[in-house]
Length: 248
Length: 154
Image 1 (cartoon, rainbow over the protein chains, first blue to last red):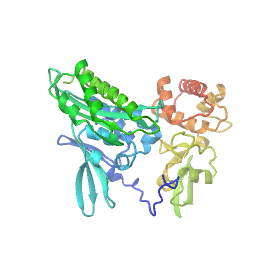
Image 2 (tube, each protein chain N blue to C red; image 1 turned 90 degrees about the vertical axis):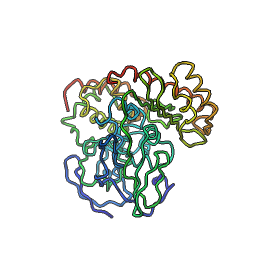
Image 3 (cartoon, rainbow over the protein chains, first blue to last red; image 1 turned 180 degrees about the vertical axis):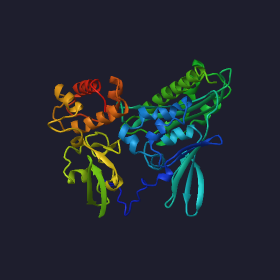
Image 4 (spheres, each protein chain N blue to C red; image 1 turned 135 degrees about the vertical axis):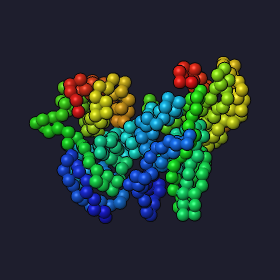
């Protein structure tokens, strides 16, 4: 943006030397991820187990290796355009801590829009328990390093009998260009089994509830169709992984 | 202007940069010409270098951000008399066509081998998503990297 002259900042403050903001910690049932943590740190961290497939999948869907080396959690939360981390963090029920000289505040991952003078300190998310799984996938028009046409992040918790106890579904475009949760789908799924009929119903509700904006990458109808496919696949992948999870 | 120091291919360099200068600007200013500017947006990888062993698009990193770092470019990999085994493999397979993207690709391959000395073809191709070859010569590039991985370490 700076190189193309679209933004002309008077001053730029380089935070890359602030090593105190680069950390991943675990304690009291939560993960704390410092804003200077790179996407590569996040993907390669041993801190996150097999339930965090949504995070692990970033190594496939988030740019390429040099992008992941440079890109930070804070940078992705703060920037505009199509972004992956806010969606994944929303599915993981994360909150973001913002700090300024006036004090601090916590916001949801999708609502993280720092005001001038505010610094993103960290993302905080609860640890995932037994019989849970997360998934993240992206439909892009290149084999890699493309901008997502549709991306979805899903969190699922099943009971011993395979009944949905908790679920969060996030799409990159729910209304217009805004990412958001599919609350009605989530509500409908709770207490049900995820089978073929349920997925058909999910697709019907989703069709009714979302209205993604068209642009040169894809039409609204196409995005709607792909959204149905990706959400269905993500739910099935979570079910498959929970059922195959021998740690439960 | 900012006065910064860094090591380029093992040689200490002290130079003055402007706040808006990128690492690629600095490197080419001090004569490291293997670092090529392609897309300037982090897609093509022609400017890839290693900064403290990490693969970085030198067109996306500000020069001041590289202060105090160790930079490795193609010039630091091998010499004409004693080429690196990646370079030998690229010659063996004639893996370079116009050649513009090759320095970046060899640096990406060097990074891959340091991380994973025995990559599968899938892993090589995944890592090479960091680079674009406009000639489309990927088959021989992948063959060359596969051969180089089989012939030693580092």
